Image 1: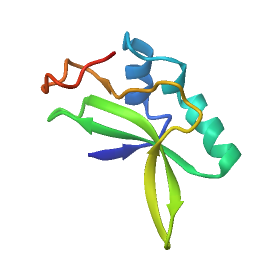
Image 2 (image 1 turned 180 degrees about the vertical axis):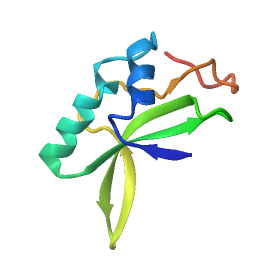
Image 3 (image 1 turned 120 degrees about the vertical axis):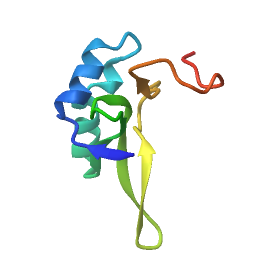
Length: 96
C-alpha cells in the first residue's frame, strides 16, 4: 500500500474515468475537509507491478490519543467507496 498526494495524476485519472466515482472522490472535496479541520489528506492506494494505480480511496489522517495518528474515511461524506481499476478479487466486496 502506498500514499499519494490528492493531485497525483494517477488518482485524478482514476476518478475522472471510473464509473463509480462521485463528487466525494474528487481531490477538491478531501482538500476542503482537510483545510477546514487542518488534517492531512491523501489517497491510500495500491499499484500493480507496472506502477499503474489499481485501487485507491481518499482518507484523512487525524490525531489519535495518546500522541498517535489514525486514518479515517472522509468526514461529512455520504458515500465514498474505494475505487478499483478492475473488478475486485474478493467476491464479498462489491459496489452497492
